[in-house]
Amino acid sequence: QQPVQSPQAVILREGEDAVINCSSSKALYSVHWYRQKHGEAPVFLMILLKGGEQKGHEKISASFNEKKQQSSLYLTASQLSYSGTYFCGTEIRGATNKLIFGTGTLLAVQP
Amino acid sequence: DTGVSQDPRHKITKRGQNVTFRCDPISEHNRLYWYRQTLGQGPEFLTYFQNEAQLEKSRLLSDRFSAERPKGSFSTLEIQRTEQGDSAMYLCASSLEDGGRQPQHFGDGTRLSIL
Image 1 (cartoon, rainbow over the protein chains, first blue to last red):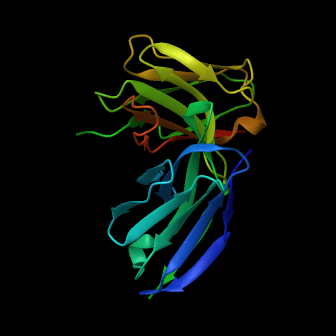
Image 2: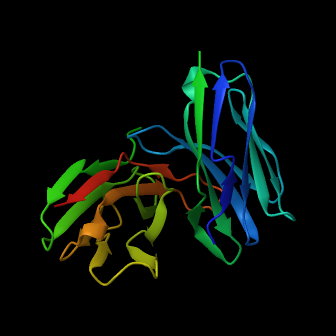
């Protein structure tokens, strides 16, 4: 039931782009994206509903394909501050109100 | 606007002892969630409240775990007869109620270590 994220880890140089994917085996109502730095709380990035695409903030955007039960997070012109572990949190149709978090993607941005 | 506050930040206890954690959500949020996170994993849902009502509890949660939100404001999570496997970060989150369109804001968590 846990969504699978890919890649598991990625190393970037500042200014490079990255894509993080989240794939669920269940029909989804919404997808939430979070970034968590070591020892800190997960920080909300954005929510996607019903196949909509929403730009959160800075140079981070995401898409949600309801039919494929997938979401992707796009980070462009990465900055050092983007480093951390990214999690997708999914709300499953018929079981909303709680998030099922994905396996996580560790992103390291180097100077 | 203060964020979600959790207390204590760290708790070390011996196996078999009881522990209680507190969470103060963002003041206008009527939903409150508890999650557990182990190293390298995403947060795992435990339970959630809407106001003072506990509406869902994970089937993974043993009877040793209990949570309350007596006045619809702060919440407590108690673990009785702690076991080694209870060692984890316990995260609290809160949100407004809006059918999943509202973000959950997390506190910094309580890290529990069982000796």
